[in-house]
Image 1: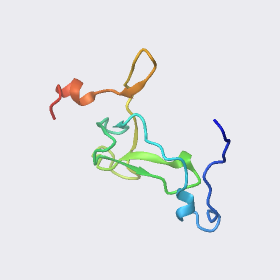
Image 2 (image 1 turned 60 degrees about the vertical axis):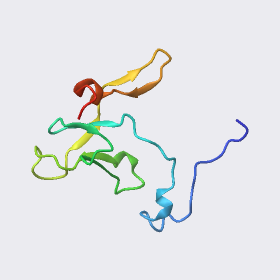
Image 3 (image 1 turned 90 degrees about the vertical axis):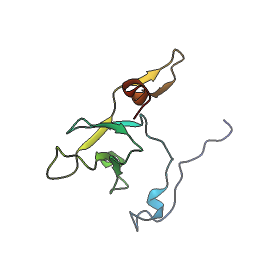
Image 4 (image 1 turned 90 degrees about the horizontal axis):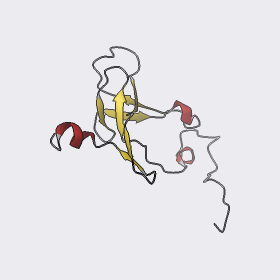
Length: 110
């Protein structure tokens, strides 16, 4: 490492908490990529249309959440929380990967 640099920052967050300055940050990819609904236990991939992400308070990343948009078990209030699936793969070198649910459960089929 040759430099120690600060995190990305744009002026303007204080004036407009939902503006472009509030969206600056470190891009990440959620892991694991499989989620489970806490109300109905539906399991699905993050890129399916079943689960969505919301963060309506940009300065509060602890309030960001994934939720099950079409859950039939929850009738009123906010859609139920979706949590990370509990099973992942780990190789002997310590690398993590998503559990291959589709291959394991459906033997590669739909």
